Amino acid sequence: MSWKRRNCHKDICRKAREPQPTSRHHRKPVSLGGATNDRNISIISNKKHEAYHLLFENDTPYQIALKLNLIYGDPDYEFVVVRRVDT
Image 1 (cartoon, rainbow, N blue to C red):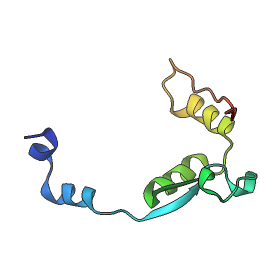
Image 2 (spheres, rainbow, N blue to C red):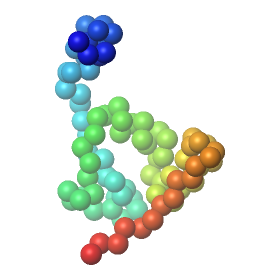
Image 3 (tube, one colour):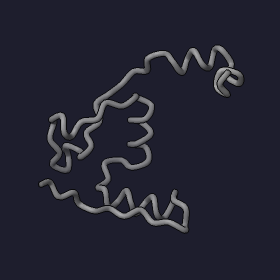
């Protein structure tokens, strides 16, 4: 028997399996020039979407990395942003 099955209260486990409401998250915000196409959209739970914007608002990747480094991240590590080069 798995750890989850042995240690999970049945109501909590059932809730975890229930479908969660989702929303469309623009990976690059429209306000910063992001498109409304599949490449720029992630389908995520409403809770995660709300949490993301609570932490990062409509910040750029550089601003997000700065917040992670200064506020949330392990001080022994550094988040670095590198622009993707499409080939």
